[in-house]
Length: 287
Length: 287
Image (cartoon, rainbow over all chains, first blue to last red; front, side):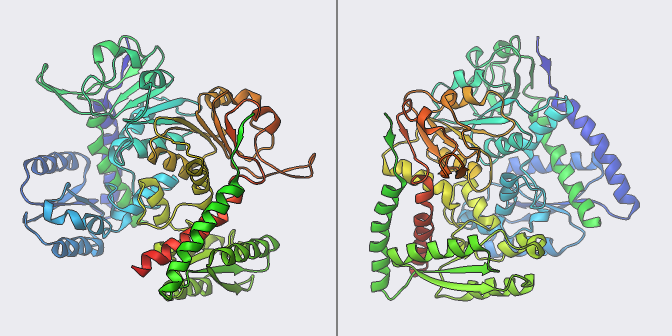
């Protein structure tokens, strides 16, 4: 029987601490504020926006919503971002992505128009340089890998001297997480679709993180007693008619020491991480 | 008996190709030009400068030397870099580092003043974002890890599906090399001073790269038959009264498949990589 690493519990502890920090800012007349820039009326964007609003309210973060028409020109979006750069009452900016087709060719230019110190969702190149170099003065890391680190920290799981195996090399999860685990002195192996003998490598991990995005990918062959398993993926499981991670939970859970559930694991922490970035940005600016 | 991976042979092949490319540029009236900015009269800087001049001459690259006094102010150095940014006849800029004490507090601001497309020695944050993201449109990777890749390519050693172990997580060698090996589909484990059981992990490698910087660090316990070993380190060996790598060569060479010597290995390739960056920068600008 593994310890269940509850993302909901981690988020709840984070939210308490964030509310205190936002309160201290409020006493100085600062409302930490996240601007959410949405292009078009995509349902998943709208749903994300609603979720962020709810979470923001809980922790004392203000939300400013900017909705642009679906056929907006790159130049207009760039102007919107530049105006937010110059707006001292906005501490963080979240641009909902993917952008519509007509903007895709300009998406790097658009993302990099944002000031790194307001880049709470790691969309600028300088933010990625910060994660890679292990520096905190260049934007913020992506929220999902940081949510993984928050779970490890909350449950007192140290990385130093441990072997970590990360499955998936994306720029939103695998690669930044490898850098963050290494920054805490784990020895990290970064696996991907071209890795042979993946189960064997996975079994060598003390900390196994899967972000493969394949339902049922991590089965009994990937795990051994003593491991901590973080399941980052959110897959649709037609059998249970709901979401599930990469792990065959019923196979992994009886073997390993600790594991995150899906839902209620890593994904439950990401929006608190986003809010923490906004509050941190406001604290830094307030200095 | 291992195959000796000769950096000198790789550099020679590279130089032939570079001379051809520089010739094609010359026909269009373009002299690919590297500006070397030196602060003070440090002997190791002067020696590096002389080496670069010699190598540049061999491959048809022009050198512009800018020597600033050792007590130069940050603002003057910044103006020098900005002038080079705007100078269309300069394609690459190399700032010799480390900078003197009085500039250290400003060194990030100084390094990032350079335009990334002229950053042939990876001193800007955007260049490091490029290595991390696997993109070639943001500056160039550091020369030493790229020299490792050149050796692998020259000798037809593929990375895809291989396990690579990199010892050392610095931003000039270990981390960028991990990214570059991964970009070619190796499964990379990045080891460092806090890694336990390093010999055991090293033996799992198909491609073992050591950049520990410790004479004699990689002994018989780190290697097994079939491995390719790249020894990046340059250590002083008092016994042989000369330089040597991390590997106990006499122990590793009889066991592994292929190995770089020190000297004459990775280090023999780096200045050709630097010259290639200058020529590539000139070609890109010439388009």
